[in-house]
Amino acid sequence: MSEEYGPDFITIVDEDGNNIELELTDELEHNGCRYMSFFPAVEEGADEESEDYGLVILKVIEEDGEELLSTLDSDEELSEVYDLFMERLFQEEDEDGEA
Image (cartoon, rainbow, N blue to C red; front, side):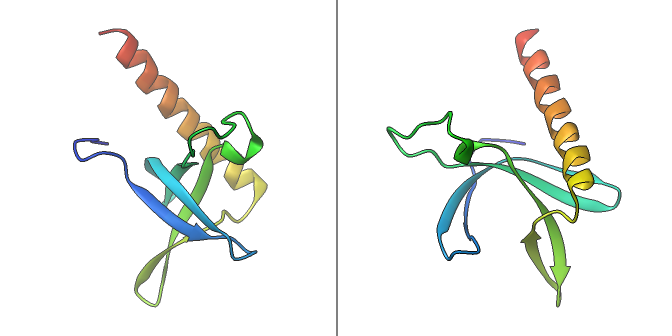
């Protein structure tokens, strides 16, 4: 993923009506589905170690010809896709360290 133009941010609304700004970190296809991973945008002075700042994984679904982001269907799907994203992340770090 190229960062030539800087990071990509999106804003989603949670079930309580709160806006959450997310930064796209990666995307992948698995078992015919497309997944995107995000980290919440961190405000200056915020505690990045808080559980509110963990990896967010959403599935891209199509509804009425429009692409939407959705939560994953099961804990098993989430665990499997999370492992794939982590594998890719650590692979990228290893490649960057070998230069």
